[in-house]
Length: 541
Image 1 (tube, one colour):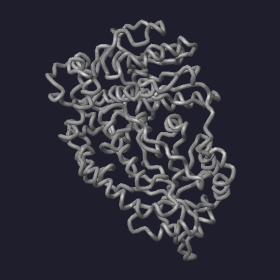
Image 2 (image 1 turned 180 degrees about the vertical axis):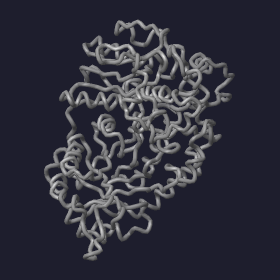
Image 3 (image 1 turned 90 degrees about the vertical axis):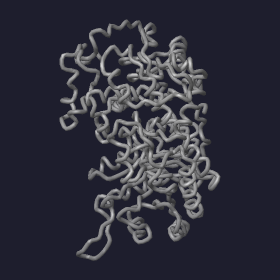
Image 4 (image 1 turned 45 degrees about the horizontal axis):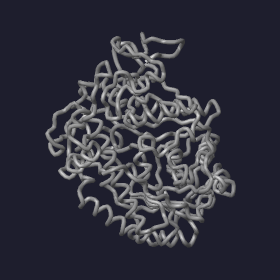
């Protein structure tokens, strides 16, 4: 019930001493198309599940082709199947998750599938095990108010008792009057939406919703950590994790501070994983597809290698094709042109960077990753939808999530200025696992709305020791549980005084990006900038 302790890292196998392109088995079969693989400079693939795939395992050994195993824990549990996902999306009510991750029979099913699939695939050249792809508490990052399974509720109440110690302390923080932890009921976004739709933010208290979301992310990560440790008992030398990771958001389970402790490899948010998995290194990858631009496709591969990716998963849409005129299988011309690049990046040039004892030497600049703030930012984004917020899908968030735009913008700005940076995990700071002054000279706080007292104290000590803090807006105006503060946690440090009586931006909304206008060009979604206070061209929140 305490902090999520990191699962042990597994040192990369000596044979994986170079970058490798692992080709998804779609529109191709590595056994049938092996000559085309050789022509393209490809020598990695994937096995689905494992049971009954003994021939592919033997092929791997015979040709010295590595593979990763996808759906090693099956499909339909960690990733809810198509018939189940509509049961939990587009709804305001709190719901039981189909295949509840608090149900021992569900965990047993996952482990049984792992046992069967790993028993076959561990005999070959396994790069890593992926439990499943595009996993989620619901459906990607779409809001899904799960999971009120009785076992999940019991787990939640024990977690709260451990977190708060006494019901009096919880009631003081939440502004509630529960008689005991056993009487606590979770709160969905609809329960707090109307109280979090207008200024002043310092008067908000989102604790009931924010703590429930935090617990569900914690539960998700704990289950993954359990599956990781179990897979290690079946094959101790190969990392376990998942692929198809989503961006950080309020729903879905994607708190990267937690997930980075729960698994040993992942396809997900690249710079976050590189930062959290720097020492000791854990493999992280991204999906690769060709764009039609040879220069762009070449740059993408080398950029990923330079930023610590040890491999990439190729999505081979149209890479291999039947040619009716010649009745032959052929490579896509663009893939054929990239063959020299594929060979070079998987050759000796990649050995130093892929070596597990190498790491990216960054500048002493930290970007602060605060997942509680990401949850609150999502709530502010969702305000524009009113009661239709359950329809705010993961696909809409892809281009309209304020926290994601901020993260990308700060990263791009620093890279364009010639700097490399690391993200800082809010959990590591809360738990005292990182010495900020020893590692950084500058820390940037991108809309870190939520700060715990422990985090604020650590940042004060950083400044006292000579460090520089840079913040944009709404810094520490809420606690880590979403309770308002007057003044903000670090207002005195920055010399800031706030007058929230006039509202924010143009005084009419809290939402920078209006997702209701998702089909409009991006600048037209920024209605809150019209009439907002500005300093030069810069909008003042």
